Length: 446
Ligand code: GLU
Image (cartoon, rainbow, N blue to C red):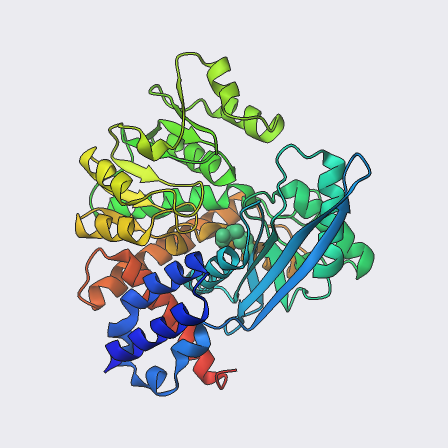
């Protein structure tokens, strides 16, 4: 029976990778939804495709030595996970954060396979990063770290092989330093990284793409349900580029985003987030959110998670990091009136929280569908780089919106097809998996 096959794959992985909790969580969520698809397509079970799919094609781990401003040598651990290349070159961001380890990067790379497949663009799944903490580091330290990181990474990437981009802790500044070092070591090859600054081969709208994309996704969902953002109170967590540009698009569409957060605390601003102030603090001054409260005393600042605050809202967009919403917090959100949860971050809801949302008629939009706008515009950046052309802001934005609409409709329709209406988790997993599985089989499962 197919359920037994899926269960056996799960048990094997839990035994082999017992310490990789985040990776197992991502795989468990995926496996919990794909049985009905596998029953319709027996060729995948016959060929043991799940066992092959859950094993990364290649894992690269390396040391990153660098010198701090005091002249002392430091070392961090660098990684690149090349998980699946059935649909194209490995594609996915680099994360610089002290929590980074193999489990977290494997979960992110695994999610990326299906996210990238859902965009409909020719990109495989990968992820990388380092347990380096950019917080409090000088520009010079960041530059020396990026140069050392790229000295090793450059041996493993290329425009037709593996194209990294940003993620937590890696933005335009870091991509610039990484690109400079790649150029020095290899050759000028613009398409080797995406999320590049606009001054050299970057794409318009790439910075905004993930945040705009998650809001476009929800906008289509609301429209389909004869509703809109007009007058809605929205909880947003995080204060990186995903949160900032989600807030921007929410305001453009008539909603009131009332919160943002960083790893220390949460801002609740009942009048609506002051976007110019937030951008100034985060993008220009690179300060903490306590500076927001200082500049705007009427806002509330509390230490701790947004999801522990008892505030009424209709929509929640978790845009910070993995596992930021647990079951108890999910229950409180539902009690406080939240009807839509769309993930700007990767896996911000635990599996129990996600299942609670689905079981309680919340429109739960998983990250691999709702936050695909970032990587989608990365793929558009690759197209522009290949053409040696720059598309207008309007053109990229329109393509982004079309892609998000298409992903929403695909998840919705796939869920319906499998008698699981409104279960976008199932819809996203099956629709993404269907493309990858077919390509893998057609390529001889290599
Ligand atoms: N890090 C982003 C993500 O989680 C973007 C990756 C990319 O642009 O390649 O999808």
